Length: 522
Image 1 (cartoon, helix red, strand yellow):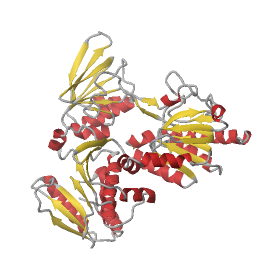
Image 2: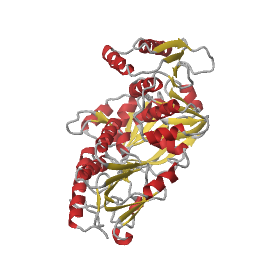
Image 3: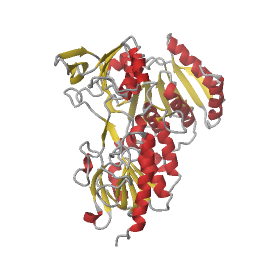
């Protein structure tokens, strides 16, 4: 299964295996099982530290395999063949079960090892999901660090009957001890914080003890990362408080318009940004959601940011780069059936709708690209556009119209998402020309109608546009002196990664100019 180049790379990685590991295969007579056997045989042949045997137990998923550390109860299990985006998860599992140390922060490692209780995790993933590896790798690492934690990663497309029985309609979906526990992209720190209920209070205590920053960046996406790097390079005390480092980029699949980088993917770009920020003395505070801005004029000389965990941060200047999130339809049934047929990531959740009927809402580039991708997986796609014509690039429209299993409805206003037995069964829309109402029988609805700025928490504290964007001038200045903003949360047009990076750099330079022209608070 592995080509010569990939084998050579994997063999080099496996030289880092320090302790003997055993691959235990649970096979059946299917073609996928034979593929899995071939893969495991190739892996075992690349290292003297790795052996292979077949599973004798009957109560395990087939085809699946475990990676166990010989002479211990440490191990992980994959149900399916972890290729595609999950091949990295496989490699990391081999290394970590084999004793190679993790790059996770020691503080997080200590926190995982101190968790008490029995945790049996199951994660459903799809091989095309760019968010799934973060969750799979995090839970795999936790099961290596703490023998009370067990994890099985399950390819939802391969175990379709199980997916339908559990009504899994979005990936990654995580079960804990047999019950639904979480869905969507989660970092290691987020998962640990969710399990360790005292983590928030400990974080708040540490944050409250921090000295005021010269520049405090709120948000860790492209704009926030660029702002932090430019500020730190000036040699001033810089901090980032981010709910999720990387922001919306973490959910982006292919990126082909970042100048000098012909192609990359969101998670890879986020990792590179995080590494670049880490090269400077930036205090990165992840998993921190800002809830209130108190301007310096009201807070005694320093701007204050109050966080959801009750802590507060102070700074002489603030750069707001909170980004945006997927816009929702706002129609009946959307919230009720989210992750039960209503989805926002076609790359992640598309494989769960193999052979089924779905709709894509939105005729811009994102919507048309989603419809094209889904058409190769699902049975039929109906694209619904509110306007009288699609807004996507011509090349995308031509591709879409060439596909035999796609219908296009323009001048169509989605009015309700319908459901039955706890999952999506269809939707209704109104023809905006005739006024007639129509119903489509569907199993999935993918919403692709743009973004909403994450600025609700700023209302009343600084000036926002009618669309909720932070109003800034050409220097990134907001209506509050000493508070700057950059990226998708602002009035700057064209929400693009490269533009956000430039705006973040500009905001940092403006903040530095502000600092040298204004005295330090008493």
